[in-house]
Every structure is written in C-alpha cells, then in structure tokens.
Length: 465
Image: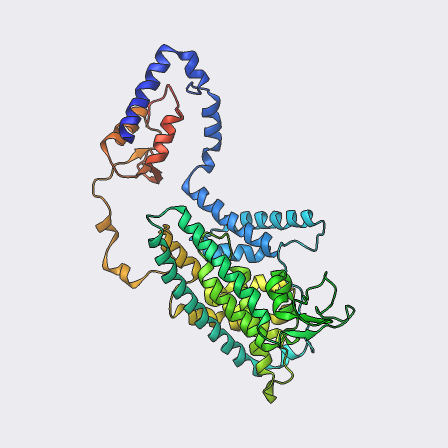
C-alpha cells in the first residue's frame, strides 16, 4: 500500500534526476526549485503547534465577531478550545479578535456596531436597586441552581440521543439524514404555527408606535397580528416568526410586556426542539437558542417572584438576563467568558454581581453531573483533546506501559534514503525528532514524511547529521 508507493516514488525521483534534469527542475525537484523555497519559507507554520494555535485564534475571532465581544472571545478560547495558552497566544488572539470586530464594524458602516448579534442595554426602574438589594443574591443562586440542573439534564439527554443518532447513521446513506431534517422541519413548523392559535392570552392590545414598547400595528416593528383582532398583536407568534435577535432583545428589555405563560411555553418548547435539532444535519448553533430559552424562563421566574411582597420592587429584566446566563453556564460551563461576553454585549457593569453569582453556581451544579456540551461533543467525535483535569481512572496506568521500549528516532536533518527505510521498516504513525546533541525537538508524523518526499523537500549536497 502506502509503503510500496513510497518506494516507487523514491525510485522514480532518482531516475528523473539522473535522466531528465530539466524535467526535474520544472517539477520543483531541483536544489533551488520554487516549490522547495516556498515550502521552506512556510515550514515555520506547518507543524502541529501552529495548527493548534490557528484553531484557537480562529474560534476566538468567530466568537468575537458574532457577539461583538473581543475580550470574551479570547476568554472563550482560553476556557474551551486551547489546552495550553501561553502569553504569546494572548496578544496574537487579541490582534485577531480586534481585527475581526473591526471588519464587522466596517461591514455595517458603524463603528458602534461591531458584532453580528448584539444585546441592547437593559434599563431598570431604579439603578440603585441592583446595588442595594442584597436580599436578591439568594435568588440569583437559586436561578443558577435551576440553570445548572436544566443544563446537566440537557447535556445528558443530548449525549444519549447523539450517540443513538451516530450509531443509526453509521451504515446508512445521507438520504436518512435528509429524512430526519425533513421530519424535524415538519414537526417544528406544525408546533410553531398551531401553538399561537391555541390560546387567547397570546393576543394583547397594541400600543402606539411612539410608546417605548414593541407592540405596534406597523409591519416594521416586532409585533405580529397573526389571527388576533385589529389593534392587537400575537406575542407568541411575534417570538416564533420574528427575528430571534429582536425577540431576545425585547424579552431582556422588559419581560413584563409578555404574559408569563407565553414565556414559559416559549422556553420549554425551544428547549425540547433544541434537544433534538442540535447535532442533526441542520447547520444550527446553540448559543442564541440557549439565550432565548434562558431569558424566557428567567423572565417567567422574575414575573412570578415579583408577586412576593419582599421582591415586589425588583426588576424582572434582571432575572431574564441571569436566566440566560444560568442556562448558558449549565450547558456550556464556560463561566468566565460568559460573564465578559454578557458585559460586553449589554454594556452594563451593574449586572456584574448577578451574572457572576448565577454563572458560577450554574457551572458548579452542572459539573456535579456531567461535562459541558463542547467536551461531550468532542468525546462523541473521538477528537484527541487534552483535558484540564486528570481523572482518577488515569492513575491505574503509567505512560511507560503505553510507550514502546525501542523508539525509532529521526534527526533534524536526515537523508531521504533513511526516511524511506524508516517508513518501510515501521508501521506506527509518529517519530521523535532529535537534535545533534540528542535533545528532543518534537514529533513528525508518517503522513508528513510522505508529503515531504512527494514534494521533494530536500537539501542536496549535505550529509544528514
């Protein structure tokens, strides 16, 4: 197979150089060929370390440009993506996230809009209420506890369902995946269409467009009539069929403009749909649906808690925001980056205490049961990922039990015939690279060696060593 092909390749290269030097130079196999020069120039970036750095920086840039949070993108990469995050990665990632958000601002033509999805500032009836009402801290912890429990249950069910989905499609074609997408689309469409028609409380009187609310008869606003009477809006249909970003903004701004039953139904319905949809062949995300679910359930809890005399003057918007933070912390478990992303998205530092308390509690409660959604996804995909914490089960074996005793090593500068012999005589995938003094420099993979031989990346006229 691959070893025989490598031997034929090396024999062909030797014959080509000896019999047809002009053709060899054209193919880039000469000493100063353009291909060799270009590959040598880019070789500093063609290693596993740089590849991992690019992945970390890319994820941070994507997160930053999506939510307009350059610092939050850095922290997300630090918490969830990179196993190691040295100081040089900090400024590299900062440059990348800053450029990403700046390009978004150029695209929109507004330097104040540097994210695809942004959260407006949230007004409260009294700015001092969040500074002085320390009695609300237990409620933040309670919301965080429920967020952690719901997140842990969601992750456990999604792991079970995704495992069954993977095994089901293992020996089946893509038509089955398309069928699943079609079935999910039909079920989602039926539910979203029939539920707003099933209750009368979803129809509320529309207010004037000059009023500071989303209810309006204008088609350019958030409200939607959807089978309600004239001068009324169907608040459930407005959430279901309108922009997700606008729905989240309106719920966070003032959840009391909605009926609490609408918020509860919205949160439960989208949580169930997300459990089955996420991981299918539909290109769907999890961050924005989680915010919508959490803000809806948090707004419902805030409206209900305001009926208690002790908390009658609190802001329901605060609990809508901490509900979103609680569910994000319970599902994703990235506490630090979530706090910063919400701070950057809303621009309100006065929400720092509620968000920190809620996120920390939700992460702690969720970690008692299982991992975050990203770790579970990598486990199901069997991605090689070095976790931050060492499991107790790892103490049963040592590295020496898994390593080979007779290690086949290569030098930093090695003869092509030596590499060919190593590839023919061995079957494993990685080879340690040593310096002249015998110091370990890194690992080179089998496919990389084959690619170097195929690309004729040679230094002729020198002895390896």
